[in-house]
Image (cartoon, rainbow, N blue to C red):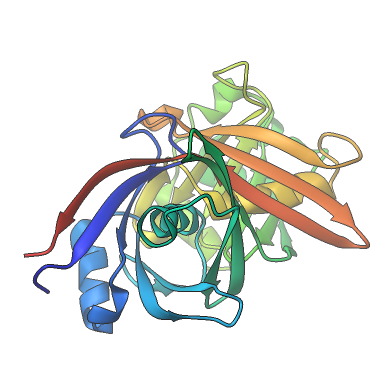
Length: 295
């Protein structure tokens, strides 16, 4: 694997070492599947991406995403981070949109620029699906909170825009910030549903400029807590729109995540509905951290 370049970027970050780090390998065609899996484990990020040779008739870039344990059909921050590297390393001009060809389907990534450099990237997510509604008492036991702290106006429900999450609406930041996950209860719950990750949110925030605070727990995949989760934020946007959490009409929100684990991240979510279909976009900034070559 001599001489192959890789890049490390922070996604959903306002500064270095805040959001969700990602390793991107532009020369994905030079790796075997086993090497990709090994690199994903060795880098020890939540995901690693590989840009593959060849492009679709629409000009999309073929991309594969690996977690520590498996190849993923879709993931949020890897899509944004990879699009950033494609713009910087392949296109090298102000392209307003880049298409990523993922197993889940084509994912458009829209890019705004500041002084010629990518500023905010937004990715279009797949049409959401709404799954099982879950007993609030069961998730309260998982989170070690009182059931009364769950906002009973809205359901606890599985939502997916490519990856499923259990979305849980809480009332207060004070309670959300002190969650202590009961690991045994967590595994008992996720073994009964499709979703393997929990995403909680509340309308109180640490920063008054933001609209929601969120936390994500993924013990099933070996991630106790993720500082920023694009795919989960897309599910949250669909949930908020479906249940009119902010009233009728579309949403354009700033979601803070990762503060409790000292990696404050900021995600942007936009959602609208027309003709019975939702358009879900998740975005944020990408900051380059490092680059190197495999020896």
